Image 1 (tube, rainbow, N blue to C red):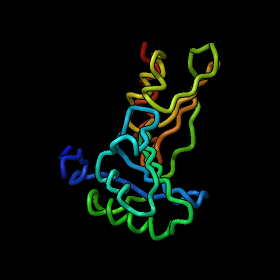
Image 2 (cartoon, rainbow, N blue to C red; image 1 turned 90 degrees about the horizontal axis):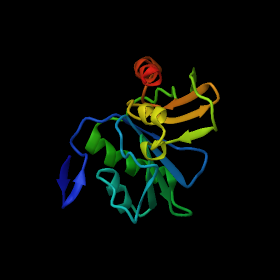
Image 3 (cartoon, rainbow, N blue to C red; image 1 turned 30 degrees about the horizontal axis):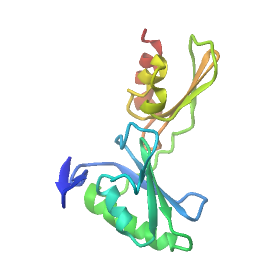
Length: 178
């Protein structure tokens, strides 16, 4: 990690990313192929967000950023020009991380049979998984963005820049480890 203007930065590193414009007109979503945080959500402000994502807060249209494991939700001010903001976001990220990647969109969850009996437990981060060994192991796997445990079943969702072909062997190993 490099520093720019005294702030931590991920600029200059090869990173895969893509920008999504979800149905909510006040939101943009940046998906990445690298872990942004092990917390459930880090919101800036008040938190200081690592650049180049932190630089998005300097855009007039951007109100806040919610940073998750493999994506950042860019919350726009009411009435902001979302298309214009998306163009600026793309310019900033392209300068730091290179061209936008194709969104492979394999984020549908997969079900795995497991030896688990107990309450339904949902985790979207290592922070939420704390204290549950199986969930903690799942969040050591690159690409896992959500895991749900239920009686005899684990549902696992991966980030859209990951493929099940690449992630499934590690998920299976994490579920089988004792």
